[in-house]
Length: 452
Image (cartoon, rainbow, N blue to C red; front, side):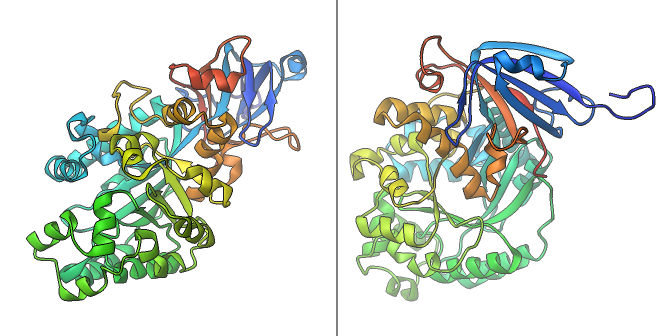
């Protein structure tokens, strides 16, 4: 907005709410939020615009500057926007796949047969995933850009860069057996031409230990250090993976043999009885800096595995509903995310792809909040822990500063989070506990670009 002198004046939005909670553990109730946009107000709450916000107790709200717009959300809880640390947006067009529940090989076949195979189709699927993410109150993602015909695919990276979301687009690659060295060369060439973008950065994702050999992982580590790229991998996800690494047999070996990729050198690198985590020790022990290496799933972990993950200073992503979809709890027992947290490992939350999620309705399809609700109902996990997993730990995993998910800080009057969301709560109950027991979707109040 301009004053008569032609100078730009800030524009204020005021929101009255039942409470506001910061992931560091602070709570204000009742709460009034004042959002100050540096320029004209955005056309919609999900249009990125620079802003700062301040939260005060509602009785102190008379001390705030007058606001151009006033929203009544007195039945709602205010939170920083959430972070989905692991998802596959390029699979969104496929929708949920209940027919493959509990059958990992069938799931892989479904993905291979149905994934988009041209850049325009990939972009459409990613855009649908972006819409569903925003409807779920998500402001940043760790997205896996699926490999197209064996080569890193940049379409998801560019599609995300044109969206309101922040985060990392991890370039998936496969490099194993007879194609290992050729695939490494292709990856090296791709890294030479990565674009520099604003809210989205590129990362590397050696897919998994059953599709990438040790040389491929070490090449990724070298390239990540050279170009300053984050790294991510699927790890310790399924019984077939464990069988392949420990005994060099099972459906993953059969697939590699059918594709002509199996070699005697590969056979010699497997079958020593190691767990997938122990198999990747050489890669895990390579320094990563910030952000840390991101280990996704970790459904089966021994005490030694937990200690190795912790000593490697890696971060973890747990996708609860995905693990439930693949019946990991029946095969491996309870997930050890709380043991990882106790060992100092930052465990973030992810949704994985839409295929392994039960609901496709907007606001729920790619919902980190629903992952929180799932764990609250099943494990009775502490609500404050769940909020940290969905915000602070996700920011750490994707290389974002803590300020990106801090709604307020007692030491500073203003904050600049990635976004602010409101979620309906129940009266006379702890507001966060109530939100986790309800089913409503979040509402975006504002979305920033402070970390572009």
